[in-house]
Image 1 (cartoon, rainbow, N blue to C red):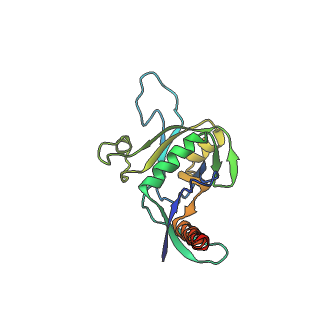
Image 2 (image 1 turned 180 degrees about the vertical axis):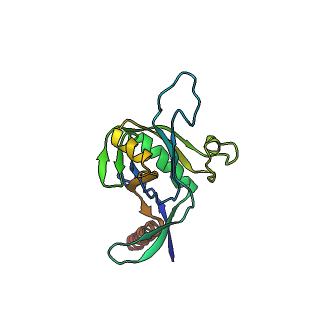
Image 3 (image 1 turned 90 degrees about the vertical axis):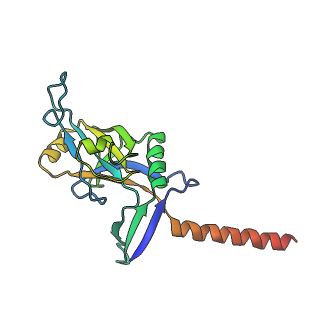
Amino acid sequence: MKLIELIIDERDGSSGIDAVSVVESPAIEENFIALSKHEIELKEIDTEKRILMGAALIPNKKIYRVNEKTKEEFEIFFSEQTVRQAMELFFKKGNQSKATQEHAKAIEGMTVVESWLIEDSVHDKSVKYGFSLPQGTWMISMKVDNDQVWNDVKLGKVKGFSIEGFFADKLDMSIEQKEKEEIIEQLKNLLK
Protein backbone atom coordinates (compact mmCIF):
# COMPACT_ATOMS: atom_id res chain seq x y z
CA MET A 1 0.00 0.00 0.00
CA LYS A 2 1.30 3.45 -0.88
CA LEU A 3 2.53 5.51 2.09
CA ILE A 4 2.42 9.31 1.71
CA GLU A 5 4.00 11.84 4.06
CA LEU A 6 1.96 15.02 4.35
CA ILE A 7 3.83 18.28 4.94
CA ILE A 8 3.10 21.98 5.21
CA ASP A 9 4.00 23.95 2.10
CA GLU A 10 5.26 27.22 3.56
CA ARG A 11 4.83 28.92 0.16
CA ASP A 12 1.09 28.22 0.25
CA GLY A 13 -0.85 30.52 2.60
CA SER A 14 -3.74 28.04 2.83
CA SER A 15 -1.49 25.25 4.14
CA GLY A 16 -2.07 24.12 7.73
CA ILE A 17 -4.96 23.33 10.06
CA ASP A 18 -8.08 25.46 9.74
CA ALA A 19 -10.29 23.85 12.38
CA VAL A 20 -10.69 21.00 14.84
CA SER A 21 -13.63 18.72 14.25
CA VAL A 22 -15.32 16.68 16.96
CA VAL A 23 -16.15 13.27 15.53
CA GLU A 24 -17.46 9.85 16.44
CA SER A 25 -14.60 7.98 14.74
CA PRO A 26 -11.32 9.90 14.76
CA ALA A 27 -8.91 8.96 11.95
CA ILE A 28 -5.99 8.89 14.39
CA GLU A 29 -7.93 6.25 16.36
CA GLU A 30 -7.54 8.01 19.71
CA ASN A 31 -10.59 9.08 21.68
CA PHE A 32 -10.51 12.05 24.01
CA ILE A 33 -11.62 12.11 27.60
CA ALA A 34 -14.29 14.43 28.90
CA LEU A 35 -13.10 16.26 31.97
CA SER A 36 -15.76 16.94 34.57
CA LYS A 37 -15.97 17.46 38.32
CA HIS A 38 -16.19 13.69 38.73
CA GLU A 39 -12.79 13.09 37.14
CA ILE A 40 -10.83 16.05 38.51
CA GLU A 41 -11.02 17.30 42.05
CA LEU A 42 -10.90 21.09 42.16
CA LYS A 43 -11.84 22.58 45.48
CA GLU A 44 -13.24 25.83 44.14
CA ILE A 45 -15.29 24.31 41.31
CA ASP A 46 -18.45 22.32 41.83
CA THR A 47 -19.92 22.33 38.31
CA GLU A 48 -18.79 20.49 35.21
CA LYS A 49 -15.81 22.02 33.46
CA ARG A 50 -16.98 20.83 30.04
CA ILE A 51 -13.48 20.34 28.70
CA LEU A 52 -12.44 17.64 26.25
CA MET A 53 -8.83 16.50 26.11
CA GLY A 54 -7.24 14.36 23.43
CA ALA A 55 -4.72 14.00 20.64
CA ALA A 56 -5.07 16.28 17.64
CA LEU A 57 -2.14 14.77 15.70
CA ILE A 58 0.13 11.82 16.36
CA PRO A 59 3.49 11.80 14.55
CA ASN A 60 4.32 8.89 12.25
CA LYS A 61 0.91 7.25 12.80
CA LYS A 62 -0.26 5.64 9.58
CA ILE A 63 -3.79 6.75 8.71
CA TYR A 64 -5.76 4.71 6.16
CA ARG A 65 -7.38 6.64 3.32
CA VAL A 66 -9.27 5.92 0.08
CA ASN A 67 -9.34 8.27 -2.91
CA GLU A 68 -13.06 8.84 -3.55
CA LYS A 69 -12.61 9.14 -7.35
CA THR A 70 -10.11 6.37 -8.10
CA LYS A 71 -10.89 4.11 -5.11
CA GLU A 72 -7.11 3.83 -4.61
CA GLU A 73 -6.20 2.85 -1.05
CA PHE A 74 -3.22 4.47 0.67
CA GLU A 75 -1.91 5.59 4.03
CA ILE A 76 -0.78 9.04 5.15
CA PHE A 77 1.37 10.19 8.04
CA PHE A 78 2.78 13.38 9.56
CA SER A 79 6.39 13.67 10.78
CA GLU A 80 7.13 15.00 14.25
CA GLN A 81 8.40 18.22 12.62
CA THR A 82 5.17 18.65 10.63
CA VAL A 83 3.04 18.08 13.76
CA ARG A 84 4.96 20.87 15.55
CA GLN A 85 4.72 23.15 12.52
CA ALA A 86 0.97 22.49 12.14
CA MET A 87 0.33 23.24 15.83
CA GLU A 88 2.26 26.52 15.69
CA LEU A 89 0.59 27.65 12.46
CA PHE A 90 -2.86 26.78 13.87
CA PHE A 91 -2.36 29.37 16.62
CA LYS A 92 -0.55 31.92 14.44
CA LYS A 93 -3.63 31.98 12.20
CA GLY A 94 -5.92 32.37 15.25
CA ASN A 95 -7.95 29.23 14.52
CA GLN A 96 -8.42 28.08 18.13
CA SER A 97 -12.18 28.86 18.08
CA LYS A 98 -12.86 27.29 14.69
CA ALA A 99 -14.61 23.95 15.05
CA THR A 100 -16.84 21.61 13.09
CA GLN A 101 -18.82 18.49 13.85
CA GLU A 102 -18.06 15.43 11.72
CA HIS A 103 -16.32 17.76 9.22
CA ALA A 104 -19.79 18.72 8.00
CA LYS A 105 -20.88 21.91 9.70
CA ALA A 106 -19.23 24.76 11.55
CA ILE A 107 -20.19 24.89 15.21
CA GLU A 108 -20.02 27.69 17.75
CA GLY A 109 -19.05 27.48 21.40
CA MET A 110 -15.87 25.43 21.01
CA THR A 111 -12.41 26.77 21.88
CA VAL A 112 -9.00 25.16 22.21
CA VAL A 113 -7.92 26.35 25.66
CA GLU A 114 -4.79 24.26 26.10
CA SER A 115 -2.22 22.85 23.71
CA TRP A 116 1.10 21.08 24.06
CA LEU A 117 3.43 18.57 22.47
CA ILE A 118 4.26 15.45 24.43
CA GLU A 119 7.97 15.69 25.20
CA ASP A 120 8.19 12.83 27.69
CA SER A 121 5.87 9.86 27.18
CA VAL A 122 6.29 8.80 30.84
CA HIS A 123 5.90 12.07 32.76
CA ASP A 124 3.62 14.06 30.45
CA LYS A 125 0.31 15.45 31.70
CA SER A 126 -1.51 13.21 29.21
CA VAL A 127 -0.33 10.10 31.12
CA LYS A 128 -2.17 11.36 34.20
CA TYR A 129 -5.40 11.11 32.20
CA GLY A 130 -4.76 7.62 30.87
CA PHE A 131 -3.22 8.35 27.47
CA SER A 132 -0.23 6.38 26.20
CA LEU A 133 0.99 8.34 23.20
CA PRO A 134 4.38 8.86 21.55
CA GLN A 135 6.67 11.83 21.95
CA GLY A 136 5.74 14.64 19.56
CA THR A 137 1.98 14.06 19.81
CA TRP A 138 -0.03 17.30 19.72
CA MET A 139 -2.48 17.28 22.62
CA ILE A 140 -5.34 19.75 23.03
CA SER A 141 -7.99 20.58 25.58
CA MET A 142 -11.17 22.10 24.19
CA LYS A 143 -13.77 24.05 26.16
CA VAL A 144 -17.31 23.10 25.15
CA ASP A 145 -19.87 25.87 25.59
CA ASN A 146 -22.11 24.29 22.97
CA ASP A 147 -24.93 22.40 24.75
CA GLN A 148 -25.70 20.12 21.76
CA VAL A 149 -22.07 19.04 21.41
CA TRP A 150 -21.75 18.43 25.15
CA ASN A 151 -24.93 16.34 25.06
CA ASP A 152 -23.48 14.35 22.13
CA VAL A 153 -20.31 13.76 24.19
CA LYS A 154 -22.35 12.44 27.11
CA LEU A 155 -24.35 10.19 24.73
CA GLY A 156 -21.15 8.81 23.19
CA LYS A 157 -21.84 10.28 19.75
CA VAL A 158 -18.64 12.35 19.88
CA LYS A 159 -15.47 10.50 20.83
CA GLY A 160 -12.45 12.31 19.47
CA PHE A 161 -10.80 15.09 17.53
CA SER A 162 -10.01 15.23 13.84
CA ILE A 163 -8.11 18.03 12.16
CA GLU A 164 -9.26 19.96 9.09
CA GLY A 165 -6.75 21.60 6.85
CA PHE A 166 -4.56 21.57 3.79
CA PHE A 167 -1.28 19.73 3.50
CA ALA A 168 1.04 19.03 0.62
CA ASP A 169 2.08 15.55 -0.44
CA LYS A 170 5.86 15.28 0.11
CA LEU A 171 6.17 13.14 -3.03
CA ASP A 172 4.42 15.81 -5.12
CA MET A 173 6.55 18.52 -3.50
CA SER A 174 9.78 16.70 -4.32
CA ILE A 175 8.69 16.18 -7.94
CA GLU A 176 7.70 19.85 -8.20
CA GLN A 177 11.06 20.91 -6.73
CA LYS A 178 12.93 18.61 -9.13
CA GLU A 179 11.05 20.12 -12.09
CA LYS A 180 11.99 23.63 -10.93
CA GLU A 181 15.63 22.63 -10.58
CA GLU A 182 15.59 21.16 -14.10
CA ILE A 183 14.09 24.38 -15.52
CA ILE A 184 16.73 26.48 -13.73
CA GLU A 185 19.47 24.23 -15.13
CA GLN A 186 18.01 24.55 -18.65
CA LEU A 187 17.91 28.35 -18.32
CA LYS A 188 21.53 28.39 -17.13
CA ASN A 189 22.53 26.33 -20.16
CA LEU A 190 20.70 28.73 -22.49
CA LEU A 191 22.46 31.73 -20.97
CA LYS A 192 25.97 30.24 -21.48
